[in-house]
Length: 344
Image: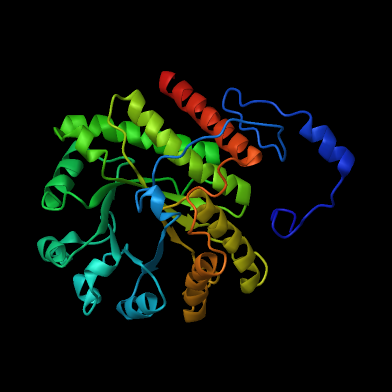
């Protein structure tokens, strides 16, 4: 239980709090400082999200991964706005009866068989979303082929940075920038229009149960992306932040206990400004997630929108001294670490 901050809240100690609050330092050499209080800090204006303009509030797309044809309609009827296909068994026929223009359809090009999806027909039916190939270790030939496969779909995002395998924020964000750097070199080697391709990225990432950490990480991703583009002489553009809540351990309490941490993770991601959010069902580790688990995962997001109104205000935590400090210190820690890694 001691490993789960959301299950074990320590008692409040005024003396300890005052001692720690008065000893706040800045980020230095990749060390990320995470105070619980700060007297003041500079506010950061976040770039616009990819899913909607700032004037539209804090919109995000409620997303669910689909592994069986019979799960498509329950997901959509339950309010899912984004459908994700990841496996080679997924086919276009699974979308029979679906108005494609009303949802986001996300294809994982590393998992699905693109030959099973009629790209031009999908575009004619109003397809919006993504068909992303991971750029982590991609080759020039692979990016050239993928770009050709989607040449008729300029508005579909086709490249993915994936940091779901990294648990620590500094490590995850550094990995994301390193993947972008690799993609830049690979696009050039493949003879692609680099400026155009970097307008078609998504960043798939994992959000843990620590609320302040998740908010700071999500906000920092947009700033770091813009900073990296500028440092490479590229035009600034929005990146689609595609968040998934962490997968609880099978022994993390009884299954329904896991809903607490997953709700905290989803809350942090929504507040931080993700473009799409998928809550992993609380019983996903138990062979096959149940229908209730999938429904509850969707309903958590409905409650955050319809009851809590988290979708109404763009960057609702902007201006909070603690959140701004965490965000700015995380940005500097990541950037310093990334630059040091480049020089090695």
